[in-house]
Length: 114
Image 1: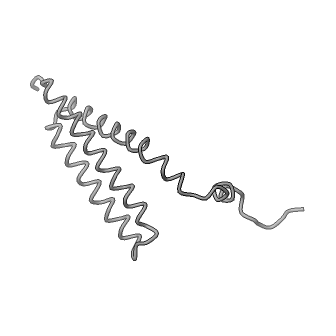
Image 2: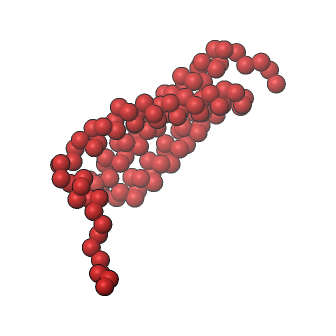
Image 3: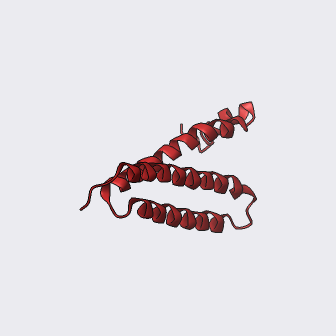
């Protein structure tokens, strides 16, 4: 096995970050589109296949089959996830009316036991 250059590590990190941002942005878009989709199962399944294939192929290509660049690309992918959660996470919870969150957390009515 050859020595891994610093440039390769940096490119793997940057590429993994970009792949993570794209993957989770596409996931966010998919989840937001489910309520209005004609075939939500097809949307979810198709989106998953495309996202998974693109992310896995991208990470393998970035790493060149070497373990250290592979680990760095996966770490970059997860950093992209963290960034998107912080950027997008708050607006999703703000879209609900004030009382709706509390109403949704209540247990469902069921048969009463005496």
